[in-house]
Amino acid sequence: MASEPMCDLKSLDFSKPLFTLEQIREVNPQRFEMEQLSGIIHVDQSQNLIVGYKQLSHDEFWVRGHMPGFPLMPGVVQCEAAAQLGGFYARKYGLISGEYLGFGGMDEVRFRKPVFPGARLDLIAMVTRVMARRLAQVRFQGWVDGELMLEGQMLGVTVTKG
Image (tube, rainbow, N blue to C red):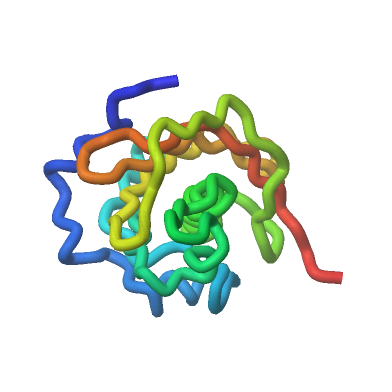
């Protein structure tokens, strides 16, 4: 996996989101504690690449119990944030069909450093393959203050209610 950013994060303006939380909600179904995106700041359709972030508060649902006195963002929640970013891109730009995009699998996931409350987790996702508009393969990275925190690949699978 790459240890360099998949795009130049320093060149992006995180203060001016392309999509706010309200606009993300128009595409992504997650609500309440499961909303893991705060904003989306960059989209490059020529590369199927998207950049967003999660601004972590000290009141996140996991802070009290993971770990008491030393809160760490759970790796599974970091992966969920990356999945929501990739899912937003795949649904917003019509790469997949179906009502939802769910986890189909994860590969080569590595957590490099812990993520703490108060941090801004910068996320990059790139859709690398779409199969029959039902499966989307996504590479992802998470960064805090220019340091790589996590990276991996995931498979998104379309899901329909009922």
